[in-house]
Image (tube, rainbow, N blue to C red; front, side, top):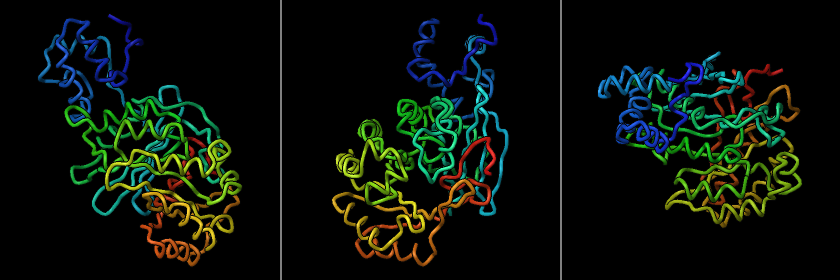
Length: 349
């Protein structure tokens, strides 16, 4: 029997790895479905809750594994109903996850890394640089743990990878997590159509994402010319706008889907009518819809939010050009839970 300190969280195993482990211990591999269904669909805390699994197998699992959860350090609730969770990981690093109320359901904004290496000027997460990737288990736990604490009337149906970190820089763990999140037999049973992965534009990873899962793609564009985008997003030096848009054109998009282009509107930086016209021109060859995100001001940045009249004029120009456009009114601003405001474990000074 392994030392208790050497036990591993069973959720760190993939479905195939668990099957192999069971077979190595002379147990038929179909038991893996029963075990994982208890963990992900029935939210089991301990192996002895698994009533359709033999006592011997319960003990064997308990001797080698445990069923872990993230440690919740803090929870804040916004005036608009958004809830921000501060989780501590086993190595004492911290992440933030945001639960966002919609009209008839909830959206969960997931983190994929501790910190971020992209250095986008408008984002608080970037201030501390990159610390490490989250494991697939740590990504899954954000969904599983928060789902556990919702009532039966609180439906969590949408997941967006728009929290801390660049998802495509941690693609292998993102894909492993999505395998569990979308599995209908033993997993968390989310619809692929209800999952969106956002990227700053890691061009070489975009096709791999699209080939692996028919989920939604959101691209953080934020400028219509390379000098401005490079200033805001250093990744543009490696993958300039024309390279990024070519990758979007070649992205394996499911039928009747569109790529969402996120455009953070910053006063006197990228909010002119000329830039609205240019954005419409750039996206014309693509199946595109546009999320306009008025900049969420914070003390660490000198950037300002444009006036409402400028925001609406920018939107109207794009609508007149035939685009579906949404002004995303970021929720949770009063608790630093809005787009670009996540910075786990640090004061927002």
